[in-house]
Amino acid sequence: MAEYETDAPAPKSKTAFVLEQPSTMSAKEIAARAKEAGLEIAANYVYVIRNNQKKRETKGTKPTAARTRAPKPSLSPSAAEADVDERVVEALRSAAYILGLPRAITILRDERDRIQSRFGVDPGDD
Image (tube, rainbow, N blue to C red; front, top):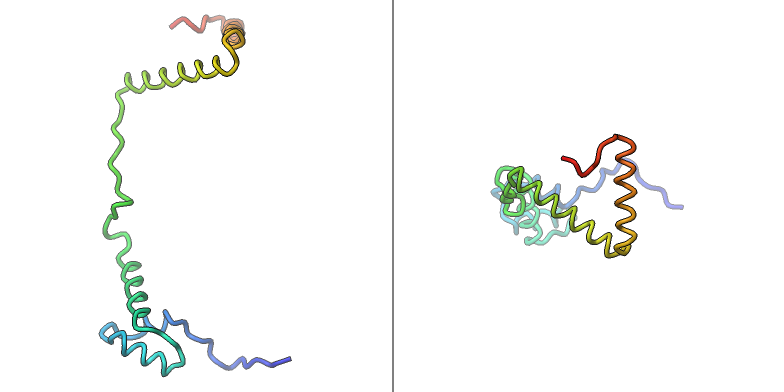
């Protein structure tokens, strides 16, 4: 079994190497210096790393188109109630279609009777 040297420094990542270089150094110079250090880095990769770093540094300073949305128009209380009523009526219609009208009517009557007996109030009274 091979033994590993523990005194050797951990290899540096390409990204860390590029970011340690001065920003005034050209991408070709960084690629040449990396080759001397035993890393294979293309000049295009240097551009990518620097661009990604700039994005990280400026993140949150400018809103992006994907993050900014126009607010939804708010409905007035009466319009919101009408919208809810419309959805409830549509749900009842769907239930009647799925269950069949006689079964849906029986369920609604049973529910009305349960509310009347429990609270002593007709649910249809407003």
